[in-house]
Image (cartoon, rainbow, N blue to C red):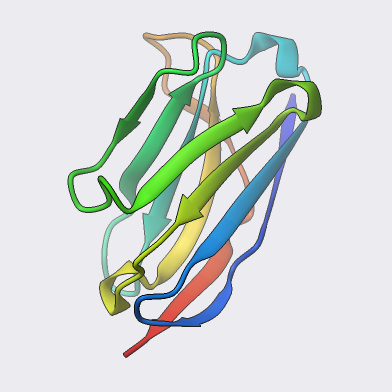
Length: 119
């Protein structure tokens, strides 16, 4: 079992910044990658960013490239999402997720944190 707890969401004006954190506990030695996803009202959940836990290599959705940065602190078992130049369309509930292998699906999810960007 892996437990994930997100924090750092809130209300921000367009153009502002927020940093989300996701602290992992439990069987974290099994982590292959961590990802961030988001779900806006009335829309399906979508991929935002992911990071390979050992190599640190990253991947981003086109909609957030050059604005968002995913990073991790292995010693703290924590993954971060730095969000800059926020837009109203970034408004969503943001979830972090755990993946145990390259061919596996994301198997553990956090409870989500609300990000609201006002225009």
